Image 1 (tube, one colour):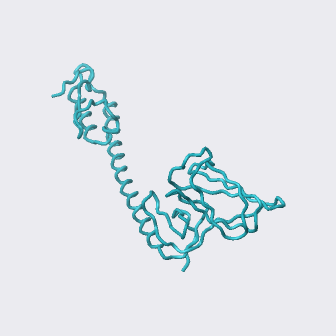
Image 2: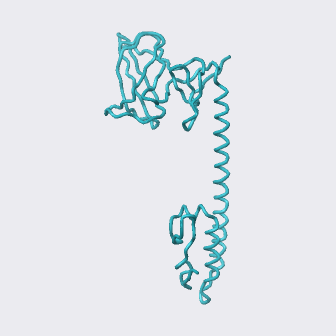
Image 3: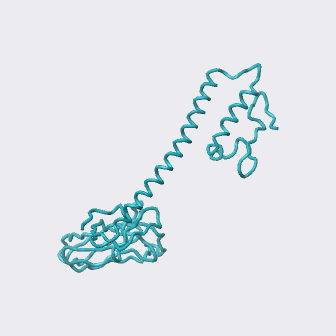
Length: 226
């Protein structure tokens, strides 16, 4: 049985978890994850307070308020987890319904997986020089290529090599293109992709639409046709 000092009601107190016995001052996440530990601490303090210096009424009221707040927070976390799980299931179901549909998506973002990421480019006219910047999820440019672009629809494929020669991690990357013609005039380059959704990849955090050679996050969906 735990022994408790009159001057320090928590001294010597231990709590039992699924992994064994740990000090009451142990990992805060373990305490927050088990609501019963808060009740144990409160009742132990009440039973072992000093007769010469009993717990102040205001302090006791404050502890009760904190106790109730912890209970509400734990219940809120559980509710939020349920809502998130439900939202993910709803999104996956909606994405699956797009298979076979003709869609237009924002092609500036593509998923790098299996050693490649592909973008569909459509310059308004031939560009003598185009700077292609690949950016990660934070907006940081990790790779840059310079090349000429012919007019019309074409595919640009990135092998995942960053500026320092390392292989990028799997994930979603964004392409920004700045192109100019032989006279130095700016050339608009569209990256929108239109086509039929062949399949939907749900192995990642968010569904990915597979449209031919392009893999575009569901968040890039712009329109759905017949």
